[in-house]
Amino acid sequence: MLNVEVHGTRFIVRVISDQWGEDNFEFLSRPALMHWAEGTFSKERFEGSEEEREQIIEAFKQV
Image 1 (cartoon, rainbow, N blue to C red):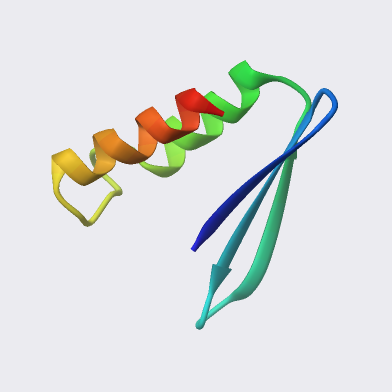
Image 2 (cartoon, rainbow, N blue to C red):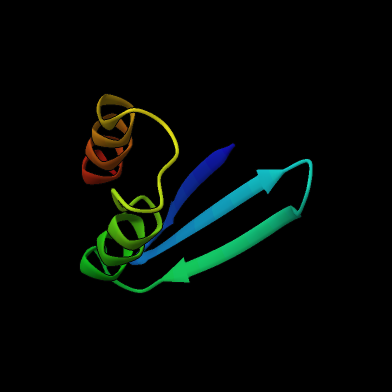
């Protein structure tokens, strides 16, 4: 599960999984957030369909 919070100029991404628990990532700009999202959900690494991947990237763009 992913949760993105906006605190002023900061973006905090929380990734929660049964296997790893909770990981937090903090970004100071939208370009930094998008760079992380595109790297994390790259075509090579993403295990779902291309449509799912595009929906996730689009959701990050809407933040």
